[in-house]
Amino acid sequence: MEPVAYIPRIRDNYARLGYPEYKWARNGDAPPWTPLPGPLSRCRLGLAASGGIYVAGQVAFHHKDDISLREIPADAATETLRATHFAYDLSDARTDPNVVFPIDTLRRLVREGFLGSVADRFYSFMGGIYSARRVVEDLAPRLAERFRQDGVDAVLLVPV
Amino acid sequence: MCHQSVGLVARHVEAAGIPTLCMTSALDITKSVNPPRAAFLDYPLGHTTGKPNEPELQRRILSEALSAFVSLETPGSVRKLPFRWSEDEGWKEKAFAQGDERTPRVATPQYQCEEDRRLAEGGGSPSCAVCVPPE
Image 1: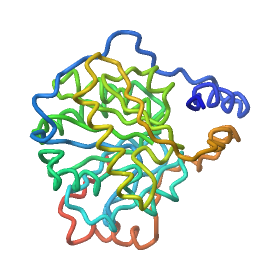
Image 2: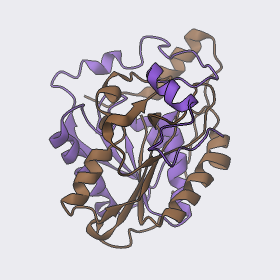
Image 3: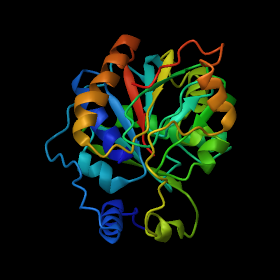
Image 4: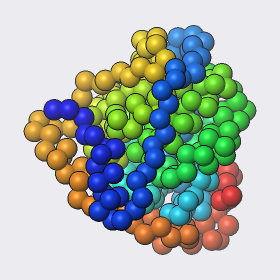
C-alpha cells in the first residue's frame, strides 16, 4: 500500500475547518550536501527531535508558536523524559520516548560500536511550527550553532 | 509541520558543513521540503523511530536508517526502510482523515503531569544542571 498522502489530507481538513490553505515549503533545487567525514563507527552523532520531549524539572513546551529548545543530556535517565505536543497522539511517546526520541537506541548503538559516540547533549523542540520563515531564520541557525559547538560529525533529525 | 520544520533545519545544518539524516513517516511532506538525506519509515505519526517497548525493533530501524549516511550518494534521496506497522495497514485509512484532533493552542506550558509543573516552578530539579529556560 502506498504511503499516506498527508498534504491533501491536511488541505481537506483545513478547508473543512475554514482555514486558509497552507503553503508548504517546496524546494525544487538540489539540497546542500556534505559527505560523512568517516565511517559511522568513528563518527560523533548529534540528535534533534521535534516531538516535544523535555526532562522532568524543565519548563514544558507551550502549544502556541513555541520554537524554544530544550537540552537533553545524552546520559539522561529515560524515565525522566516527558512528551508534550499539540498535534500527535502522545500515548506511545509517554510509554516509551524512544518512539520519537531514540536516546536508548543511540546509546546502545554506541556500546555496540556501530556508532563512534554521541554528543554530550541532544536537542528537543516542538515542531508544529506554521511559519517556515521562523524555522529558517531563527530555529535552524540556533541548532546549527549548537551542533557546531558540540563538535558533531553528523546529525540525526527526528520529526513526528 | 514537524516534517517540514525538520527538513528545513536539515538543509540549514548541512549547508553549515555538517551532514544530516532526516527520519520521516510523511513522505510527501519530506519530498516537498527536499532535505539532503532521508529514511522513510511507513508508520503512523508519533512513531518515527519505532514501536514502544520494542528495543530490538528500534535498534534495527535506527541502524538501517543511519546506514543511509553511507549508502545515499545523491542529494535529496530517500531510503525506504523495510518495516511495516501491521499486515493490513488499516491505520492508513484513518490517519489524519477525521478532522482536527489537535489540542487548543495555549500559551502556557503543557506539562505531562502536575509533578513536573511543581518541579519546574520550583526552579528545576536539583540534579538538572542544564535546563534551558523558554526564550
